[in-house]
Length: 107
Image (cartoon, rainbow, N blue to C red; front, side, top):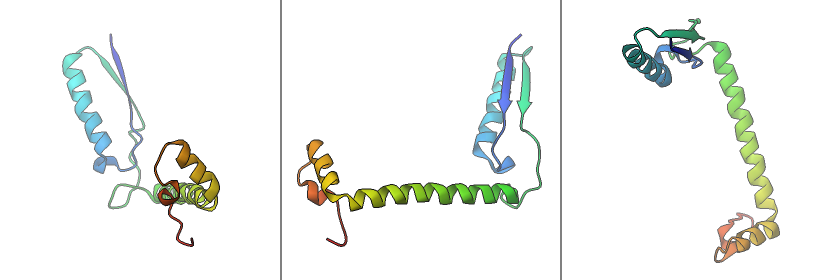
């Protein structure tokens, strides 16, 4: 007997593209495996806003986005302030005019 484990983690519930694709896949799998067993994890309904996310999920998404943006901003700032190293790196890649590849607004 075949077993299919379905893990639902999208906070968007019925608005989730991945949940809808998963549901279609499970239907097709059941047709191809009539004696198979489907196990589900995470299908629990939570109190949600109009877009399908809870307040805690909204807050977690916001914190995650702020942390990701800080990571990219820090990396970009480090690259912009290390002009000589960036020129050497772009030169090692064989790019023409390495000092023009890196645009510094204060230069």
